[in-house]
Amino acid sequence: DTQMTQSPSSLSASVGDRVTITCRASQFISNYLNWYQQKPGKAPKLLIYGASTLQSGVPSRFSGSGSGTDFTLTISSLQPEDFVSYYCQQTYSIPQTFGQGTKMEI
Amino acid sequence: EVQLVQSGAEVKNPGDSLKISCRASGYSLTSYWIAWVRQMPGKGLEWVGIMYPGDSETRYSPSFQGHVTISADRSINTAFLQWDSLKASDTATYYCTRREVATRGPYYFHYWGQGTLVTVSS
Image (cartoon, rainbow over all chains, first blue to last red; front, side, top):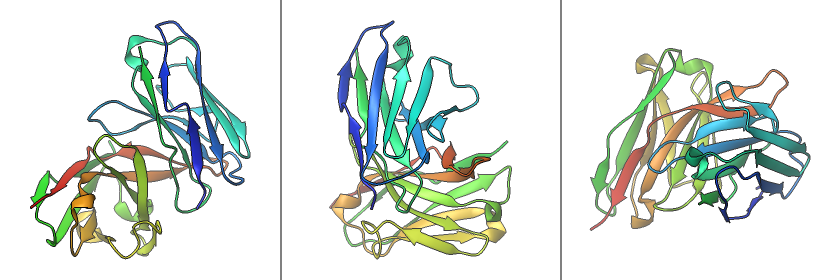
């Protein structure tokens, strides 16, 4: 299996801050990396796919970068609704594993 | 409009069998891979397995292989996740999700069901 190491597991920040979440794959995954946002009690929502492509309808303050094994999700200016959980996922090989998640806290 | 609608919450005893469903609408189930994802209470997302209903090819995570079965009924456009013998550790919310393919290859999951909470307790 490809292990996805996501950090930090929790992140304290303030409205308006710029934050970065990182995800490292245990082996090469090209750009087969997605980012999801999950609100409590809800299904995950796709933010970024292919490492850097913003899903339609997702605010432009979200951006992704990286290739190979190292990836980042950046939120340029945190909004109150962004204080939820985020997950990376690799879809290069099966099982299509997720990172452990990052919980954003005010 | 593409929708994945899952069956309702279940409460079961250890050792019981269970089959939960994911009904697709707005597209043909046979045209896309469907995956299942587990989320234990207060925990992260875990990839269970994936199926292509068009030819029934199925792949499982080693962590779930042999304990769950993914299937589909093309006549009712519905995918299923089933257990023959539940354990307390199966208590979780299970999501179904459709796999998309980007123009240059990467796969991603955009459409998700609302989740089915399975509680296994004696």
